[in-house]
Length: 145
Image 1 (tube, rainbow, N blue to C red):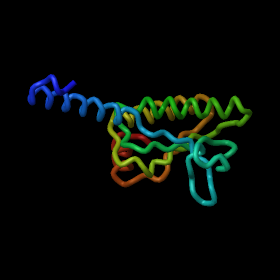
Image 2 (spheres, rainbow, N blue to C red):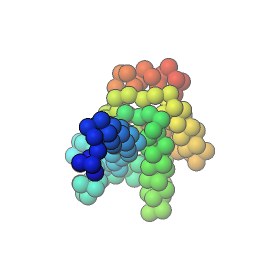
Image 3 (cartoon, rainbow, N blue to C red):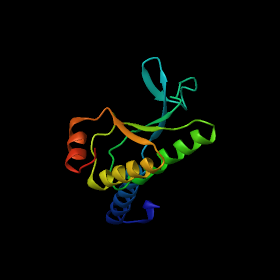
Image 4 (tube, rainbow, N blue to C red):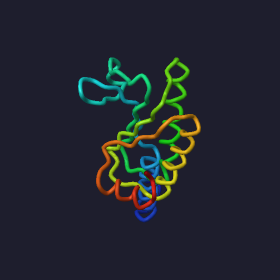
């Protein structure tokens, strides 16, 4: 395609494709359902023998948590909990292992607060673990407890 374009047009096409690829990667984080292997939490896709807690789902997102991907995390947690419940488990907790989350914005804070409230209606609790200091600070300032 770029052979028929001038240098300026080729650079513009390359720039636009690069921006689109970046936006796609930002909005499509790696979301993982975790299970315990020895003392570590691992992706159950790669560790099928990993033990999942009987009353909880443990998820991890390997990206910053912000407006572009917050709803994907929320939907993933809800689907994981519903799937476990359809298999006969009573899900009391949804745990977010946030060791891979370096940043969080206010729209993501709102999503977490809304998710916690929605879960409380079903007598479930949202727990965020392994918080890094900047993330914990942002959540605190936003009033997410």
